[in-house]
Image (cartoon, rainbow, N blue to C red; front, side, top):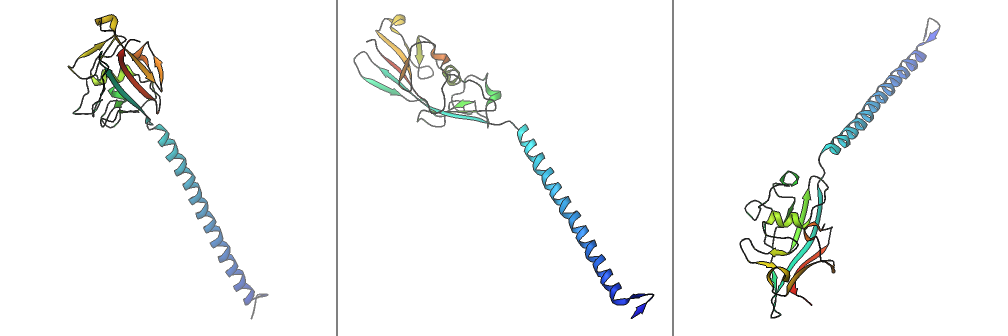
Length: 195
Protein backbone atom coordinates (compact mmCIF):
# COMPACT_ATOMS: atom_id res chain seq x y z
CA UNK A 1 0.00 0.00 0.00
CA UNK A 2 1.23 3.40 -0.95
CA UNK A 3 0.41 6.45 1.21
CA UNK A 4 1.86 9.82 0.46
CA UNK A 5 4.91 8.40 -1.23
CA UNK A 6 5.79 6.04 1.68
CA UNK A 7 4.75 2.51 1.87
CA UNK A 8 2.77 1.33 4.89
CA UNK A 9 5.21 -1.55 5.49
CA UNK A 10 8.04 0.88 5.84
CA UNK A 11 6.05 2.97 8.35
CA UNK A 12 5.37 -0.09 10.48
CA UNK A 13 9.04 -1.04 10.47
CA UNK A 14 9.98 2.47 11.40
CA UNK A 15 7.52 2.67 14.31
CA UNK A 16 8.62 -0.77 15.59
CA UNK A 17 12.22 0.39 15.46
CA UNK A 18 11.36 3.59 17.37
CA UNK A 19 9.63 1.53 20.08
CA UNK A 20 12.65 -0.76 20.28
CA UNK A 21 14.98 2.23 20.55
CA UNK A 22 12.82 3.70 23.35
CA UNK A 23 12.89 0.41 25.29
CA UNK A 24 16.68 0.22 24.96
CA UNK A 25 16.93 3.87 26.08
CA UNK A 26 14.76 3.35 29.20
CA UNK A 27 16.47 0.06 30.13
CA UNK A 28 19.85 1.80 29.84
CA UNK A 29 18.65 4.59 32.13
CA UNK A 30 17.33 2.06 34.69
CA UNK A 31 20.59 0.08 34.66
CA UNK A 32 22.61 3.29 35.07
CA UNK A 33 20.46 4.37 38.04
CA UNK A 34 20.81 0.91 39.63
CA UNK A 35 24.61 0.93 39.23
CA UNK A 36 24.95 4.46 40.64
CA UNK A 37 22.66 3.56 43.56
CA UNK A 38 24.72 0.46 44.36
CA UNK A 39 27.98 2.43 44.28
CA UNK A 40 26.56 5.15 46.55
CA UNK A 41 25.12 2.53 48.96
CA UNK A 42 28.40 0.61 49.30
CA UNK A 43 30.44 3.81 49.60
CA UNK A 44 28.29 5.18 52.44
CA UNK A 45 28.03 1.79 54.15
CA UNK A 46 31.82 1.56 54.20
CA UNK A 47 32.22 5.17 55.35
CA UNK A 48 29.73 4.69 58.18
CA UNK A 49 31.39 1.47 59.31
CA UNK A 50 34.69 3.34 59.67
CA UNK A 51 33.10 5.75 62.16
CA UNK A 52 32.12 2.95 64.55
CA UNK A 53 34.67 2.21 67.23
CA UNK A 54 36.71 -0.81 66.26
CA UNK A 55 37.40 -3.26 69.08
CA UNK A 56 41.04 -3.93 69.90
CA UNK A 57 41.43 -7.55 71.05
CA UNK A 58 44.29 -9.50 72.53
CA UNK A 59 44.84 -12.40 74.90
CA UNK A 60 47.76 -13.54 77.01
CA UNK A 61 48.33 -16.29 79.55
CA UNK A 62 49.45 -15.65 83.11
CA UNK A 63 50.29 -17.93 86.02
CA UNK A 64 51.40 -17.19 89.56
CA UNK A 65 53.71 -19.68 91.30
CA UNK A 66 54.46 -19.31 95.01
CA UNK A 67 57.36 -21.31 96.45
CA UNK A 68 57.82 -21.79 100.18
CA UNK A 69 61.23 -21.74 101.91
CA UNK A 70 60.91 -25.55 102.28
CA UNK A 71 60.84 -25.90 98.47
CA UNK A 72 57.15 -26.67 97.91
CA UNK A 73 55.54 -24.75 95.06
CA UNK A 74 51.90 -23.78 94.68
CA UNK A 75 50.15 -22.56 91.56
CA UNK A 76 47.86 -19.75 92.64
CA UNK A 77 44.79 -19.58 90.41
CA UNK A 78 43.78 -16.33 88.84
CA UNK A 79 40.09 -16.10 89.61
CA UNK A 80 37.31 -16.19 87.06
CA UNK A 81 35.44 -12.98 86.32
CA UNK A 82 38.12 -10.44 87.13
CA UNK A 83 36.85 -7.24 85.50
CA UNK A 84 33.36 -8.71 84.96
CA UNK A 85 30.13 -7.66 86.69
CA UNK A 86 29.63 -9.76 89.81
CA UNK A 87 33.31 -10.77 89.93
CA UNK A 88 36.49 -9.08 91.16
CA UNK A 89 36.28 -5.62 89.66
CA UNK A 90 37.83 -3.15 92.05
CA UNK A 91 39.36 -0.39 89.92
CA UNK A 92 37.23 1.50 87.43
CA UNK A 93 39.57 4.09 85.89
CA UNK A 94 39.62 2.28 82.53
CA UNK A 95 35.92 1.32 82.36
CA UNK A 96 35.19 3.72 79.49
CA UNK A 97 37.46 1.60 77.27
CA UNK A 98 35.84 -1.76 78.08
CA UNK A 99 33.47 -3.66 75.79
CA UNK A 100 30.17 -5.38 76.63
CA UNK A 101 30.03 -4.07 80.20
CA UNK A 102 33.46 -5.42 81.18
CA UNK A 103 36.74 -3.83 82.12
CA UNK A 104 39.17 -3.70 79.17
CA UNK A 105 41.23 -6.47 80.83
CA UNK A 106 39.30 -9.41 82.26
CA UNK A 107 39.07 -13.15 82.85
CA UNK A 108 36.17 -15.51 82.25
CA UNK A 109 37.55 -18.63 83.95
CA UNK A 110 40.47 -19.84 86.05
CA UNK A 111 42.65 -20.98 83.13
CA UNK A 112 44.91 -17.94 83.40
CA UNK A 113 43.83 -16.44 80.07
CA UNK A 114 43.63 -12.69 80.39
CA UNK A 115 41.57 -11.07 77.68
CA UNK A 116 41.96 -7.52 76.46
CA UNK A 117 39.02 -6.01 74.61
CA UNK A 118 39.05 -2.27 74.25
CA UNK A 119 37.44 0.43 72.17
CA UNK A 120 40.89 2.02 71.87
CA UNK A 121 44.28 0.52 71.11
CA UNK A 122 46.32 1.55 74.12
CA UNK A 123 49.05 0.02 76.23
CA UNK A 124 47.47 -2.03 79.01
CA UNK A 125 49.91 -3.18 81.68
CA UNK A 126 50.12 -5.95 84.25
CA UNK A 127 49.66 -3.23 86.84
CA UNK A 128 46.33 -2.31 85.24
CA UNK A 129 45.15 -5.91 85.47
CA UNK A 130 46.15 -6.30 89.14
CA UNK A 131 44.46 -2.97 90.00
CA UNK A 132 41.24 -4.14 88.29
CA UNK A 133 41.55 -7.42 90.21
CA UNK A 134 42.05 -5.47 93.48
CA UNK A 135 45.23 -7.12 94.80
CA UNK A 136 48.67 -5.73 95.65
CA UNK A 137 51.20 -5.80 92.83
CA UNK A 138 54.29 -3.61 92.94
CA UNK A 139 58.07 -3.86 92.71
CA UNK A 140 58.41 -5.58 96.09
CA UNK A 141 55.12 -7.32 96.97
CA UNK A 142 52.33 -9.34 95.41
CA UNK A 143 49.00 -10.54 96.71
CA UNK A 144 47.16 -13.41 95.04
CA UNK A 145 43.80 -13.11 96.77
CA UNK A 146 41.78 -10.15 97.94
CA UNK A 147 42.41 -10.01 101.69
CA UNK A 148 44.91 -12.88 101.38
CA UNK A 149 48.59 -12.95 102.34
CA UNK A 150 51.04 -10.56 100.74
CA UNK A 151 54.31 -12.03 99.48
CA UNK A 152 57.20 -9.59 99.58
CA UNK A 153 60.83 -9.71 98.48
CA UNK A 154 63.42 -10.81 101.02
CA UNK A 155 64.52 -7.19 101.37
CA UNK A 156 61.13 -6.38 102.86
CA UNK A 157 60.42 -9.33 105.19
CA UNK A 158 63.79 -11.12 105.62
CA UNK A 159 62.43 -14.44 104.24
CA UNK A 160 65.17 -14.96 101.64
CA UNK A 161 62.43 -15.07 98.98
CA UNK A 162 61.96 -12.77 96.01
CA UNK A 163 59.79 -12.67 92.99
CA UNK A 164 60.37 -12.29 89.30
CA UNK A 165 58.09 -11.85 86.33
CA UNK A 166 58.94 -14.04 83.32
CA UNK A 167 57.67 -13.07 79.92
CA UNK A 168 57.94 -15.90 77.41
CA UNK A 169 60.67 -17.41 79.60
CA UNK A 170 62.74 -14.22 79.89
CA UNK A 171 63.18 -12.83 83.41
CA UNK A 172 62.21 -9.28 84.25
CA UNK A 173 63.31 -7.96 87.65
CA UNK A 174 62.14 -4.36 87.50
CA UNK A 175 59.01 -2.32 86.83
CA UNK A 176 56.61 -5.23 87.16
CA UNK A 177 53.58 -2.95 86.98
CA UNK A 178 54.73 -1.47 83.68
CA UNK A 179 55.09 -4.76 81.77
CA UNK A 180 53.01 -4.61 78.58
CA UNK A 181 51.57 -8.04 77.83
CA UNK A 182 51.43 -8.67 74.10
CA UNK A 183 49.18 -11.04 72.15
CA UNK A 184 49.88 -14.68 73.08
CA UNK A 185 52.52 -13.80 75.68
CA UNK A 186 53.04 -16.34 78.45
CA UNK A 187 53.68 -14.54 81.71
CA UNK A 188 54.70 -16.27 84.92
CA UNK A 189 54.90 -14.45 88.21
CA UNK A 190 57.31 -16.48 90.33
CA UNK A 191 57.93 -16.06 94.08
CA UNK A 192 60.93 -18.24 95.00
CA UNK A 193 64.02 -18.47 97.24
CA UNK A 194 66.93 -16.28 96.29
CA UNK A 195 69.55 -18.28 94.42
